[in-house]
Length: 237
Image (cartoon, rainbow, N blue to C red; front, side, top):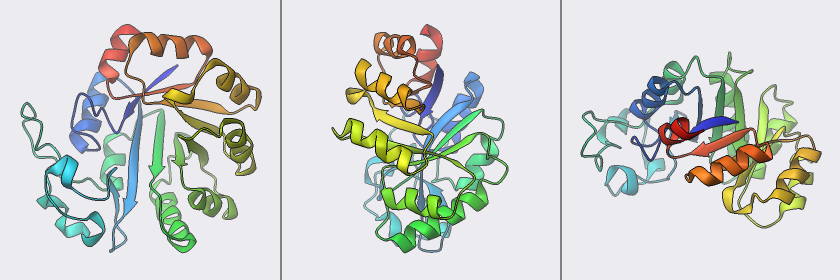
């Protein structure tokens, strides 16, 4: 089972930051999950929320920003033990840090329209050139998957599920041409994991921070464990 750092290593380092990605690189972990959004100037950036309140402590909507403004927001502001500023990273900056990783889950955040889905997925594919064997493009948003499917993307795709529509989700993932489902931890019981395996779909489970739960999922044969605490998991698994 692969240990995958959630947003880098959000329990051990500032989330979705270059410092966080370097942190898991230094741990020896070679698998990571992170979030991608597209700014008004088309820049692809790594950020989970659509504002800077939680991670940078500033009242600012993300989509009001352009790439040149990103340096104003420090995502390590709540980390008293972190000794460097962590501005919002671009996708290409992140890929430079994790260029040698074995597995990269690129979560594309939801967009408003099919046109936006087509625009962001095309831009992501262009920047991910060279990562076709290691990157999986994931999303909850069906518009993202439909845009990739219609374009006959060469990238592997994973459907993310957090609602109680388990078996419908397996059929949906297959219809969309996905090779993987990312199940929310609370949904991933033995029966559901077996049904996903029977459908020949790989499985990542998120977010798993308890050691005993991680061992249970390992024994059930899931491929990926997405965790906020990759160092802790590395020590126990």
